[in-house]
Structure formats: C-alpha cells, structure tokens
Image 1: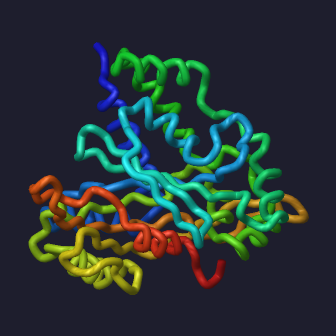
Image 2 (image 1 turned 180 degrees about the vertical axis):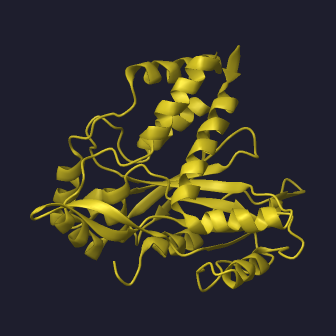
Image 3 (image 1 turned 30 degrees about the horizontal axis):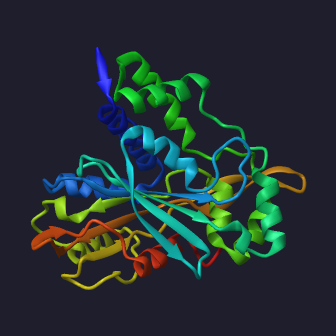
Amino acid sequence: MKVSAKEITQRLLDRLWEQYLKRVSYAQKYVDLVTKKGGVVVNDHIAFRTFNTHCGEQPDGIGAIKHILSCLEYKPAEKYDFVKKKLKAVHFVHPDEMLPKIFVSQLEVEQLPEWAQLIIRNAVKDTPYILSDSSIELLGVLKNEGKLPRIAGEALVDDLVQYFRRPWEVPRKEDVLKLNDVSQYAAWVLLHGNSVNHFTAYINCQQVKEWPDLETTCEGLKAAGVPMKETLEGTKGSKLQQSATQAVKEDVEVKGEEGMEKITWTYAYYELAQRGYVTQNGKEILFSGFLGEQAAHLFDMTKTREN
C-alpha cells in the first residue's frame, strides 16, 4: 500500500495544526466556537519566518522551508518585498486549492547594524540539519515518484514535524533583548526558529450564519473573550480583508548570566482572512495572493509593549 504526496502533505499540515492548537489557545477557541455553531474550520494559509544568512547545515532564508515544500508539490506563486522591515517573502501554492497556501518570509540580515548581524550569525552558524538521512532520501523519492510506501510515509511525516522548531541552540537572553530593539522579527526567529508563525482562518469557507464575514467573526471572538487586533486590514468588499487575535505568550528558555532561565515572549497569533473577487481573463475569481501593506502590519502582531 502506497500513499501519495498529497496525503503525506495533508498529514504533515494536520500534525502542525494539532501542535499549534495546543500552543495557541485563541485558535482553539475559534475552532470550538465555529464547530459549536455548525460551521467549518478551513485554513487559508500558514506562515513561517527565517534568517537570510548562513545557518550551518540548514538552507539559508526561505530555502529552509522551500526545499521541503518543493517535495510536497508546492510551487512558488508570488514574491514580496517589505523594504522598511528588511524582509522578503514568497507565497507557495499547492495544486489542490483546498490545501493552505504557505507564506515564507526572510529577514535580510545584512541590512541590520553590524553588531546585530554578528549576534545572529554567531547564534546560527553551527546549526545542524535536523532531518535524518533516510528522510532526505524519502523526500527525493516522493518528489520524483509522487508516492511512498505507507510505513515510510508515516516515518517521514514524524521526522518532518520535528523539523518545524528552533534548530539552533538556546539563545542568550542578552542577544534576544538587544536584537528586539532593532527588529522584533529577529528576536522572534532567534527564539522560535522554524516553528509555525501563524495559521489563518479562511472566512469564506466558515459557514457560520451569524458570522457571515470577517467583521462579524472578529466581533464574535472579541465577545467570547478573545483579545483581537483593534482594526481590520482592508475594506469590506475588497479583494482581501485580514485581522488577527493578539499573540499568545510563552515562557521561553534562554541562557542568562548564571545559567538557563526563562523569559516571557510572544509566540503566535491566529490570523483571519476573507477573500474577495477579482476579474481575470474576463472571469470573476477569488483573489489568491497577498497585499504587501496588510502583511507588513500583521508582522507586528508578535510585537508587544513588554517586548
């Protein structure tokens, strides 16, 4: 019995979603509310963050995620440049439009002050490649043949799941705090590495009568006690409207002056997106891309007054 690349991809995304729900209580609250109301939970996209600098044995920047996605039938669709934030990004799409898009960004480390570049490069330069040799081989087979024996597919998913975490050593507390002064994105990646940055509810598929759009959904979540972003990105009826919960915070391990200690830091938020129609080749289709200005604002959801 063999499993297809799509089945393996779906299982991996399901596992990452399960992990994320355990860490992001606001996302679990959304799932509980929508399910209770007879609705459907579908994710529009998943986001990852990376450093565009030498990361030891792991591919640099967007490549850290892209080289895995390319074996799972995902293809790059569009590039983005966030000049003020010193970020670049690519979003990837799967042939099955019901599988979430993947949005991968990278910090252009060389554009930071030299001292900040040095902190990042020293922290990640000896990063090991945390996929096993057998998984690398299986990814190659999957890319070429589009399927694997079931047991091999299950083993590959197990190994891929653990790739999406911080791959380098526990960072120094002093480094995290210093980096945060010039780039909260840099501090976040130093702490969380390849971890999922956020999932995104696809409001178009939600099917909750009392929450027919993004605005009513956000109001409903807020009324249920979920702390929400104060404003919506995009106007009603536009090709893309987005919002998000606030980011949950976690106690994260760091190296202090006297050994290991923990600091409280943002992890992830749950984003929500409603897509509108655009005209393409004379046909009305749902807009499938992203808007730079909106995305730039949403990067800041991992920034808080405290950090």
